[in-house]
Image (tube, rainbow, N blue to C red; front, top):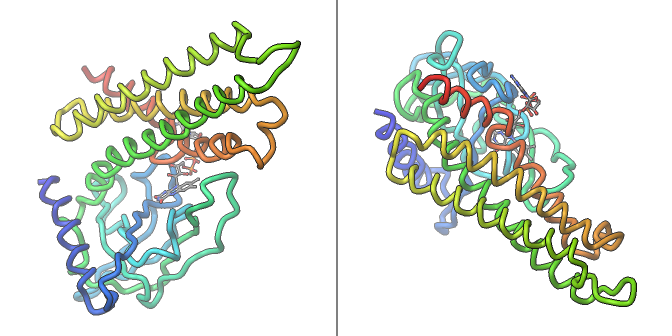
Length: 288
Ligand SMILES: Cc1cc2nc3c(=O)[nH]c(=O)nc-3n(C[C@H](O)[C@H](O)[C@H](O)COP(=O)(O)OP(=O)(O)OC[C@H]3O[C@@H](n4cnc5c(N)ncnc54)[C@H](O)[C@@H]3O)c2cc1C
């Protein structure tokens, strides 16, 4: 049932890309997903969607939406029913719909290649035909999407950590202290070795989780949670350690390593914080 719902997300979005407001030149249209200001307790989201004839009237707002204001299509989780996850539905809202507006561009510590804004709905009328899946299926659709999102975010951390290790290795070879390259220090050699081992462990966990997700295995949720928790924590620590190895230069914007630290920090918060990952993992263990 849920798989069908997610396939309909893709079909509906493809339909919208060809729709009346679609770009004439066939350019790609950005798609972002919005959950709510509810944060970690996603099932408590408040954005309401009240049905009036063949439209839903949306009211509420969503903080921290990546690509908010720039993307053309918004996949919105909203409350069509009572409290809890079963009252949540998923609708697609196109940019330009009256009642849809955006907050200011947030000033962030990192992740500056992508704008982040609040998305605001004020009596925003959306055709019922824009609903994905049945009423009440929105939470399941969001959670299913989040598993893939967790693999994505964890993989971004891998890239940052890999690049940081390369930068640190090259720096240790050229920077001299106490009459010899820093690379001759056994303390720093051991640290570099541990960083590489933690990177490979993170990569293996992500691959295992991605395989489980692709095979639609029952353990996919817990493996994705573990991979996201482990890889984003470990990779941030690797980036931070690489900055430390650069000494004061690591703190200068002229040196790339600081950007990896700033960009990878948010991965411990996004797509469900790492505390939420711990909740999901322990819940699965306790239910066995
Ligand atoms: C740059 C950026 C981009 C984002 N993009 C998107 C997006 O595109 N779409 C989208 O829907 N969301 C997006 N988010 C929102 C993100 O998913 C939330 O920030 C995240 O889920 C945490 O919610 P919160 O910020 O409300 O923190 P809160 O839920 O208020 O949590 C605050 C802290 O308390 C911890 N905590 C909460 N409850 C518990 C508990 N019971 N036990 C232990 N610890 C707990 C949390 O882990 C966190 O550390 C984005 C956020 C950022 C920063």
